[in-house]
Amino acid sequence: DTDGRVIIWDVLQGTPIAALEDAFYAGFGSADGGARRMDSVRVPVRALAWSTARNLLLILLAPGYLLLWDYRSGGVVWRRDLGPSDSFDSMQTDPCDRRRVVLSTSQGAFAALRLDAPSVDKIKFQRFQAEISASGTLKCALPGTRDILLLLLQRELIAFDLEYGQPVASTSLPAGVPAFSSVLGSFGHFIADVSPLEAGIDALYCSHVDGSVSTWQRNQ
Image 1 (cartoon, helix red, strand yellow):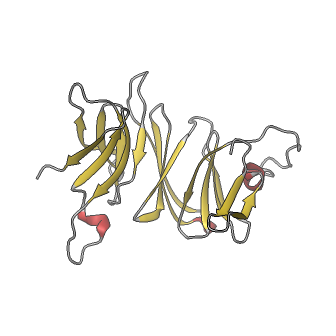
Image 2 (spheres, rainbow, N blue to C red; image 1 turned 180 degrees about the vertical axis):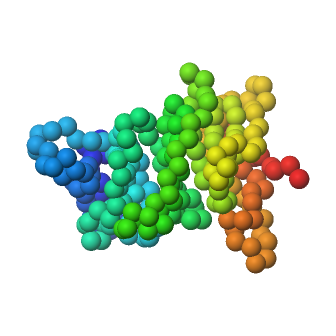
């Protein structure tokens, strides 16, 4: 919540099973050599995502603090201060590989992380900047395809290659179609003896600001 509190609930029992009362203090309270005062301003939680294992929760705090919390043991496994240059407000994980994480800002900055071994700080980190208009927005999604990231602008959908650090394909909305809202999901075909991460994307499902849904198919 906005006070930096994270609670894991058992929805069947309707009771909490774990709580992190102050996520920033748990991860960064002693980073500057001392604990903060109890009456200091709390750091709000921006986003949550399950990552790498069922008991590990990735927590994004404003403006750019990231930590991995083991809710079973109560300990913080890994933490990173991403710096003051960007205020990340969104986080997504790859549904096919939860070691892969993407962070983004509405101003066009985005960062891709791969959490190979957080306990020993084996993390791949890449930061990029997309060109958007002053009134534009940016949302990102990992579609379950290796090294491909989807960038969703208000009226443009871009496939971005993380290995080469550049766009590889894009399409724009036809005139009269409402602006994009989010990527709902992706669909790919099955190839024998090939990982789903390598098979590619055949179709995308996107929502729009008016509540409508569109389907986008790959050109053969």
